[in-house]
Length: 170
Image 1: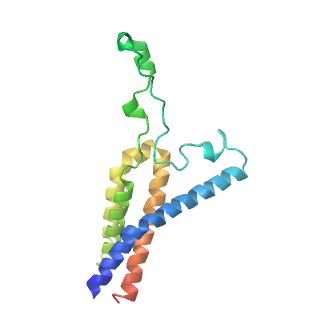
Image 2 (image 1 turned 30 degrees about the vertical axis):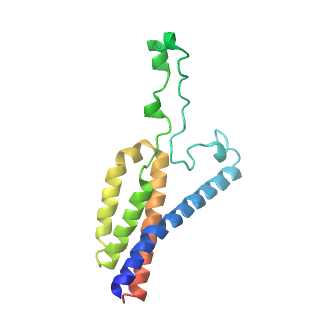
Image 3 (image 1 turned 45 degrees about the horizontal axis):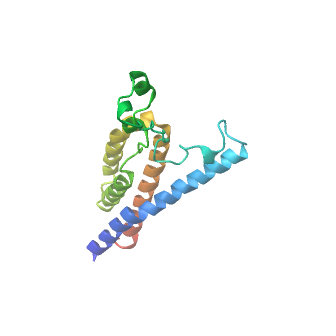
């Protein structure tokens, strides 16, 4: 019977935590929007126009127009330098794989608590932080999403594990 409760706790922590985390992201965005509206327009406009406010992609850069015909197939070096590279700039997702990492993180945290090894949570945080360090350092929006998502996921998983442990695994 304990195996059933452990399995249900892991599934609840892992998969139900995803909509909970998405709800917290929306809540954070709503609070930011209200703060921006209360202080008047932000420096560059309102939060609805800020592409990085709650986005998981970098702002889109319009790609250069395609050449019209075979005689204009080779762009001049000045035109090539002026046009941004489509592969390196446009629509690059920040925090790729975050949903899958979040599910695995919640499984690990829940399992660590159910196994009586809460110190293992430090390993999860360390691995996750080191793996994302360069991206977090370069993108403030990514760092904010990382902190909100990680804390929400860990609190959800720890709460589910503690509840299962107290109520069913005594």
